[in-house]
Length: 181
Image (cartoon, rainbow, N blue to C red; front, side):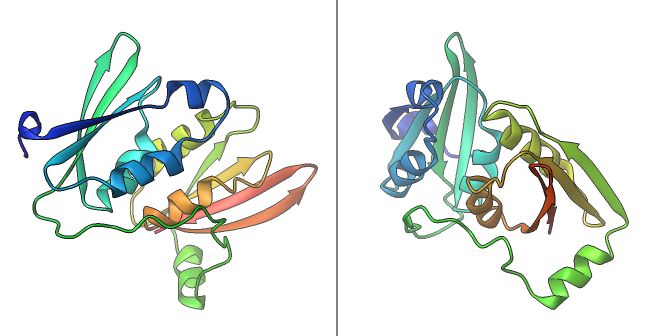
């Protein structure tokens, strides 16, 4: 593991963004995308951002997390085994229907469906619960999420983490999101 003490620290505190209801994801991705090899991003957040770990890992970053009195301090640094930088794309709504027939067959053959109902939860709790379950999901499993709205902020994170997903409107204000690898 990289000795993070030798890296120049760039600090980003997103607690106020989260508290005001803003989504700091794009700000974090831009800050990480600007890091040089000799720099680390010190993210200060009021909760542990589990979804962010897999997204940034897929972009070549490792992390060290410390629980501090005001929440969490997470240091993201480039994994020396991964080369190159990633480009930060402008925020976009990922197309939840962007998959092949083979992907649908893969979903149909999943042996175990894990149910998760996130209706009534305040952000960021739905995303935290979803990614906490996805971290432990096996190849023969899929996640079946019931949500009270179309989770457009979830789609880019799922896509970045390598998941396929399909959203169906169930009626009565409910959406069903199928997630699988």
